[in-house]
Length: 83
Image: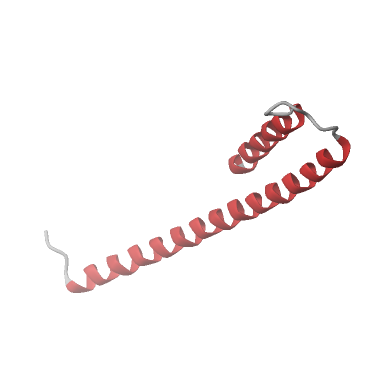
């Protein structure tokens, strides 16, 4: 059964509307992810400043505060992406 031109046009309009809604949802997701990324970077900057001020120099390649910071950031990112 072949669709009439009017039916094809109606289907095309519905498909376009569905794609537009999907695009808006994806843009919202991207915006939330970018905001979360910016929040994490800001928090990272604050934590690094705190560690620089409150942590004595360390001769090892990876200091404990840096490892803790990496763990905290990974946890924060995974929680924000899950939202």
